[in-house]
Image (cartoon, rainbow, N blue to C red; front, side, top):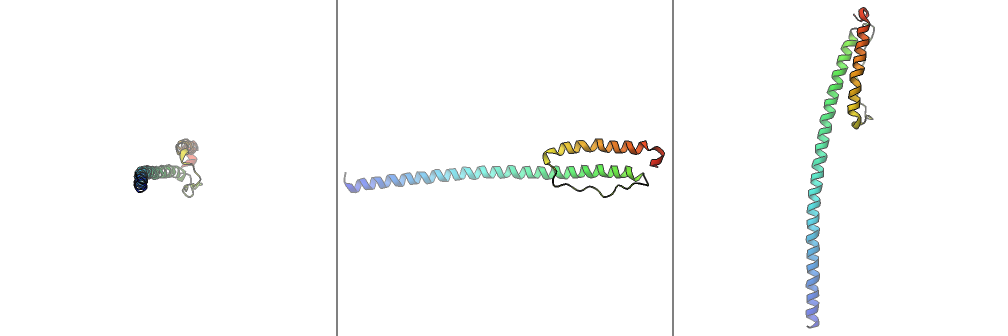
Length: 121
């Protein structure tokens, strides 16, 4: 073999390695793009579920508030005041606990108003 043919073979070998590296990189990038698209779709679904849960919770809280305000309206000497506003510092993972606390508080209020008897009229 001549020195020129050895250099040509080495050149072909380097080009082959570069082509393989480019193909491997392209394959990795396509796989990564698929992973990112799946992660984005998952995140978008989680955000949509959180928005729906927030709306449902707000509706439930407003319903409880209206029921409590209706009970308080029976008392001429007491005003319910403004409806509560959402609290930005509330923790989403505690949402169920917050909602569980509303029912007994409402029932306690209702019982207190009913126990006033004639004064509630």
